[in-house]
Image (cartoon, rainbow, N blue to C red):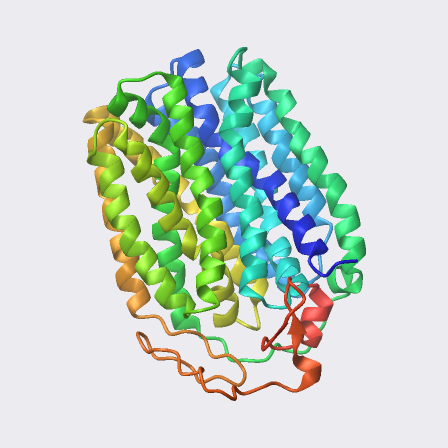
Length: 428
């Protein structure tokens, strides 16, 4: 078995789950068209998917820090798909919210444990986590295409067909967990992980994660309608814009892992957010076809830090990596939904462009937050102060003992710390 096979399967499974997060935003124009929902009412659907998920993911993270729960991967995948599949069958707004919320709970159950498994399968490699994140981003990107293909020439009653990716994801979970064996399904251990928790830095990182989420979810909720207005085009232009917003995330995630191998994660994230602030301003205020370019730049800028924030959180809380993943991976895609109804109300009262303007400030805030964050300490490497340059480029870099060096997803030996007893127990 090739060493990168588990990461590949986990990435595909991640895509099968995150397609349902993208599907919520992709369904909004159809709910507006078929059911005559206003901006505020439509954004309530995004809120339903996000509210329980934003609370539940950290809870699932805490639970997976105590007990190994590999069964959450197939169970969360199936629940995420079933909820979206049922969302279009009833004209009742209450039932629609309920089914979308069920999907959100399934997504919440999946992510903390899958991030732990991916961390273990990739032996702590930044690139491995970026490939795992890439799968989720591709799922996001494919969501509007999938929804348009299934519903675009029919009606919301075709949503049951949207369960198919979940069935594929469940089928992939079995061989993936079998390949990982006790690393994914072992019993809980009690030996604490190496390293000291840096709670203060983790809190600052979490604020940045929430801020990023507000921008991304706010744009994904309204970008389709906004681009139609800015380009004076039909639904096809909105679908293209949403596709670019999600597809650029795939490029950004891989680019983030690549850059993190050459520069520290904090610096890469900081400059990515500065780029994002400029790009979001272009999305909101530049008219005509140029808006598509700014949508793509926004997506890349927001997703370069995506996988880096996951590993940063886990390194800030080495004794609670499940909790860290539940916050950084969970709030990244859910907390913004809590703000979407406010944007919807503002858009109803003023205009969609006015409602989206405050989003420009969020990446700028993150640029400031990352100035206050250190690069987490790594065994054999001195902890960096905020803004300090790496000093690990000597001809003879410090090496860990051979038994702690681990191959990354490409089979090369890296200086990442070896798995702890607790990692073996939890599987990531």
